[in-house]
Length: 231
Image 1 (cartoon, one colour):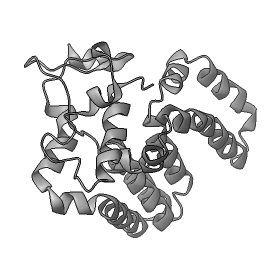
Image 2 (image 1 turned 90 degrees about the vertical axis):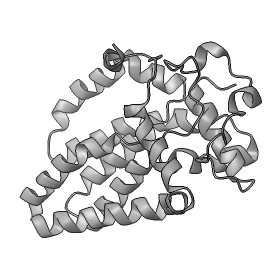
Image 3 (image 1 turned 180 degrees about the horizontal axis):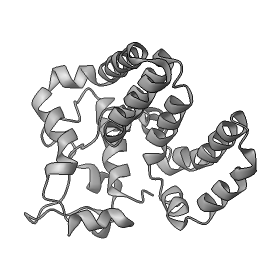
Image 4 (image 1 turned 180 degrees about the vertical axis):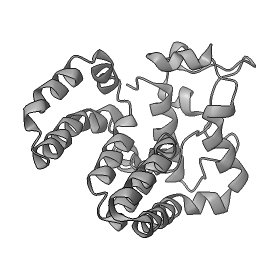
């Protein structure tokens, strides 16, 4: 019932964590694909002839799935409705700034973006970090709240770290460097509250895991312009 290897690895990580196993430990997720009967064409291969079979994202990527692991709910059923949230947040933001007349154009871009619906159908959990990142930006004038939301976003996947310096610069220009540094401190605190146990428990494995998407010898299996990076 799972559509991607990422879903299989993350929900299996939630499953074994409930049994007291640190999913970042070497070999902890080795049984994920056979446990869920995932087809070979859905598994990301490596240049060494093996497959990706470790947790490569921060801890929130599987913590949110603990209720689904307990109740044996398909992760896609949890993720799919959340793809309606970004258009709602965008409408609120545009209306707040008196720009709602431009919203139909933005909505059309989303509706006509086939990849957005493709990701929704396959239960891509990128939507989580996107929603929290959007919320962090919307509350940028409240450095504490914005920082906590950004830290949660970063705890789902690593992509927000690329946006962090630009957001801090923008925040500093809007409300000052002191507020931006306060926001950064809340980002760090919220990230370590979520990931701290795993960082302390297995620091090298955690670091190796979260750095592997950019350093591992993967053969890209996916969609979109990101595939260019595998050439």
